[in-house]
Amino acid sequence: MSVVTNSKIFVSLESLSESLQDSIKCIIEKTKYKKYDIAIKIFDTHGNNFLGKIYEIDITGETAESEKNTYIFVKQQIHLENFKLLSIKDMYPKEVFIYKDLSKIFNYLQDEANVPQEDRYKIAKAYEETDDNAIILENLSKKGFRTYEKLENVSIKYAQLAVTEMAKFHALNFVVEQKLPEYHSNKIKILKNVIVFDEEWKGMIRNICAHVASLYDNDVKKRIENFSSTMIEKLPKYLNEKYSGRCTLNHGDFKKNNLLVRMQDKEVVEIVPVDYQMINYGTPIKDFLYFIFTSTDREFRKKHLKDLKELYFETLSRFLLYFDMGVETVYPRKEFENVYTEWLDFGLMMTLGASFLIFTSDTGIKLGEVALSELPLCPDKKYDYLFRGLIDDFIEWGYL
Image 1 (cartoon, rainbow, N blue to C red):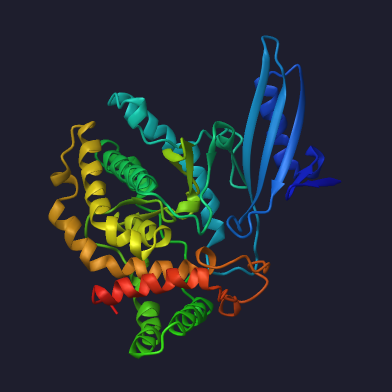
Image 2: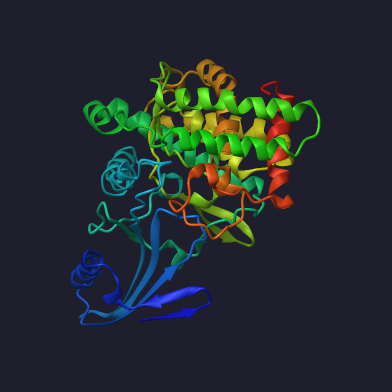
């Protein structure tokens, strides 16, 4: 039985899977509650977390010592048999690896280097009951964190904090490579792209490019239509072929609805990245480009792109100094600039490829029920200005 309140569905503990019930009961037992109440809410994220059921579980009660509250966030894996875009079987173990394994390495290295608490890279606390079927985390919304909506404009402060956290994430992986080389080789260097570049994906890309081309009525229309062939050939190479330059662990899906934000006086003061299911090993510029083009518009990029790129490299350099590592040894500025120029169109390709999720309204269609090539693109003009801004940037820079 369930009750719907404000688009949230309240469910009973008994309605959860047996394994998730056991995990929650184990957390209650470890916390040593003498008595407690439990409230479980399931959320419809309108496609933002299409690979998982999302729960908030609030446990309130008493231990022998005092009153106690435990606030839990759960993402439980959904098995989509017919969804072929992503290798789902590889995605949940990756996220478990981050929360239960690599986060401990990061904390140890930052402790050892005496990195101040306010400057540390932060990963949400995971419960030991986390496994390949359910990610169980501290619910940071109870501490004032939230995510941005698809069309919510980002401030320069938001973008600066996001790029700063990204640079710290990459820096820590360079540190792991130097200080724990065997761990790096066995656990990080093996992490590969999870996007499946099959015929359905090709059909989806052609449809996306056709929609974007329809926004123009001049020679640009033809260029965009032709670009679909370039993208189908080039993007798999970007993500699958071994890159010979400097590599590190990438978040893989670093966009605004995967960043938890805490506000103060209507401005962002703290960011915690989440959703590590698409982590992969490769050039770090991929995360930067994906964030910039999925999370900002053309006007914002005109004002701030150059400064944000500079901030990324400055933060990488500064953070590595905590570990007595020089950026020119780890990731020389010349290589960074060369890769940025060579890979800039990766930002265009990845943003177009993900646009059926990030630039479109919720259609109510469940992924896996229709072929990727048949997914509808919402023609709403409020999204089309983002497409046009993306295309206009790359025309101006000579990539289209």
